[in-house]
Amino acid sequence: MTGKNKIIEYINKSVSLTEQEEEIFSASFREVKIKKRQFIVQPNFIVKNRNFVLSGAFRAYVVDDKGKDSTIAFAIEDWWITDYNSYILQKPATMFVAALEDSTILEISYEKEQALKQENHKFETFFRIRAERTAAFMQQRIISNLTQTAEERYENFINKYPQIVQRVPQYALASYLGMTTEFLSRIRNKRVTKK
Amino acid sequence: MTGKNKIIEYINKSVSLTEQEEEIFSASFREVKIKKRQFIVQPNFIVKNRNFVLSGAFRAYVVDDKGKDSTIAFAIEDWWITDYNSYILQKPATMFVAALEDSTILEISYEKEQALKQENHKFETFFRIRAERTAAFMQQRIISNLTQTAEERYENFINKYPQIVQRVPQYALASYLGMTTEFLSRIRNKRVTKK
DNA sequence: CAAATTTCATAAACTACTTCATTTTTTACT
DNA sequence: AGTAAAAAATGAAGTAGTTTATGAAATTTG
Image (cartoon, rainbow over all chains, first blue to last red; front, side, top):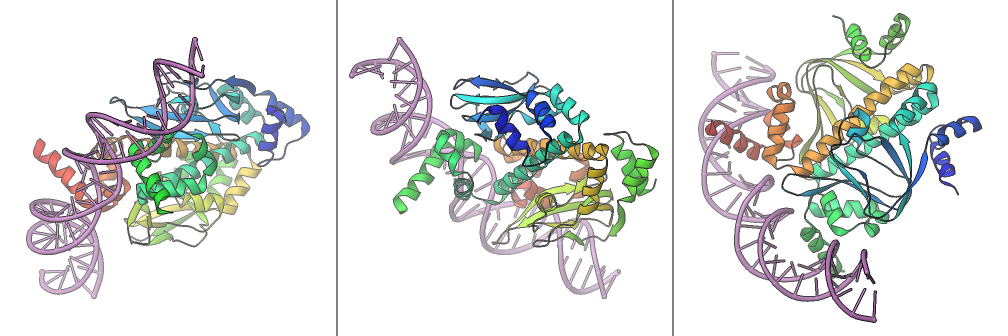
């Protein structure tokens, strides 16, 4: 299946498009290959694109003044990734977004997205649903951070996203879950010896 | 100013409505008085309304099996509050939402909101922008949780939301920031004696 | 306005998690 | 294939934040 077909299949889960609308929608995206370790977002630049992952994996993270690295998001096939604050509010990014594997994405520019939303109610609906799902997902993460211990957050994550656990380095997962890589290593080892 | 006028003023910051549209929009809301300590959302019930606060203050929180109480959100005048996951996905709530003061809200039902979005592109745009802002806000909170110490999160909060600090009990603020009320008390005292 | 209840402060003992330092294992590169 | 580099494991010592307990202050309610 081509990348364009994949994104059409994706949007049709939320809104149903005519053939002509499918054409307009998919024509707004550009397919781009990204090498492992390559950046698609860097701090201080205004983010131009929203990105849909066709294949591969990405990590969004911030680095504070002490050099501490915190993972904000992961994305694999069928997920979206960007610096959300920078893209939505068109202000300078605070994150890096880097490929964890050789990847292929479909990118849509801010201007094209605005045009789509303006010209057709259905596209507006699609992006509204996207934003709602994003907010719902983030709220779940906030709740997990507030209510669970490090070990519980890890258990929760491997249950919800087993495919991701396999593919991302341990230090990245640890910093996503808000703990050190050493501590996650200990949690994992404890689990193994238990069984 | 009446409550209906306030919500019209609010929506006009995002999209510009005709007088007739203003009428349709404001007619979808119902003004309700809520007494201090009264609940507008309780766990296990599907949340029927999205609520705009005209006056007063609210707190959304979860209580885990050990009885630990974690604050998920606050809302004062001009903010919205509900159990977001329950409302958006129309599944049972996990939160309580309770008034911290005698309050007045404008509530809109899920069905009415759906109807508004369907019948008029502008309303769809409005709720899309709402969802985007909500997601952007939540992502900032996730970043704060991951990168800052308890003391930094508190400093950050009083800078961003000084009006809220005044009005909510310390234990609620502490559990919003992911720390115990005892620890927040210590942070506050350290600050005072420092000066 | 007095009693009851809720909220806040303080302190000592404790623990979940971090930091630092070193070794082993895995991955990347010519 | 062999070497360099990155990632993961392990242990020991340290610390940010919690727990438990008690009393004082503020707020609510009859």
